[in-house]
Image (cartoon, rainbow, N blue to C red; front, side):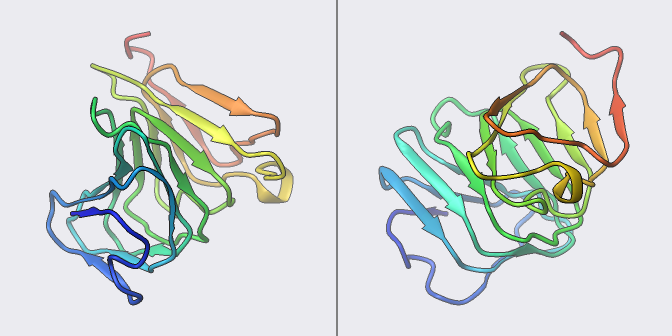
Length: 169
């Protein structure tokens, strides 16, 4: 599903039930979605923006599904997560840029970083966003490949961090 303008998804919640769904912004420039996004059981949707576009998801993402930020040559616009998210299926960062603006931006499940076969990704912390101390990321983190953290503020992983030693580096 490509959404090109603010309000294209309406004002109510957006429920993603198809296991292979994609929710992409392709209108150019930047947009902020404030809709509540529900990840239904068994879903593995990709959220992102096409090249030349930037997407901020400020509404809450909830539900038992998991979320992908995957590498695709035409869908590398920045993705910003700024909601107090409660989804429990986890988040896979398999490529592209992911900017975090809230301690619970990653939801409540495992945060998987990198595809051990192909690619990794970058995490950015915007100025003024504190993800350390009381605001530290408490998710379990599974690092499967090298990755980059950028920004001017600290980011602390307060939950368990698991390093996969046979990952391609």
